[in-house]
Image 1: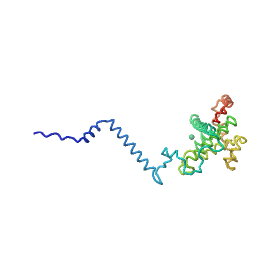
Image 2 (image 1 turned 90 degrees about the vertical axis):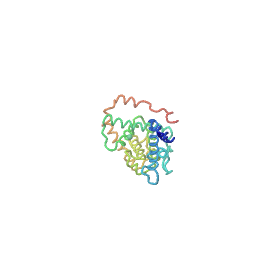
Image 3 (image 1 turned 45 degrees about the vertical axis):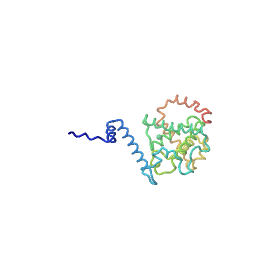
Image 4 (image 1 turned 180 degrees about the horizontal axis):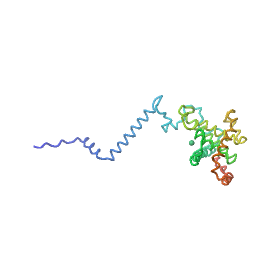
Length: 241
Ligand SMILES: [Zn+2]
């Protein structure tokens, strides 16, 4: 008499079939990985003293307005929506272009790389006439004021960043611009800079101008530069919409 092979229970049979299906196993491993990651994310960002700051790592927290309603968010009363968009956007592009030229031409930087990129961007904003300079400076100031507000103001982690604090960056742009165009930007400097800082702005502008002449200018086609500087950069409708 031969023994009947022991029948597998339906659940064991299903498990065995599942294990033979590589795609299904890989899919389950991926789901388990995501589940673990999300549990770890919740654990690391929970509580009053989380290991990771939720505002640094979680998108919904990054986009949440700061708890302090006095922090500046959105449009400054003196800045139009068009100025904020055009000036803020061009300011960022000029900052990144500054990094690119530093890197490509191996231009030496003394001090913080990010401050140097802000300085060259502020200097570039002044090269296309007073009207363009005002729009760029206002938009850039508004952008950094807003980013400062969104980041929650003074928080210890921000001091460890490679950039200056948002509020400082806005003031740095304005100060260099005011130093270069004092008559055209006096009203903005009176509004947004302290008297002590205003006194130093002419020197800050001259320092950047000297650095530009000593490092950047040798790579610039001066005839082409003169042509570009005569171009109309902004149409009125660019900033009124
Ligand atoms: Zn940068």
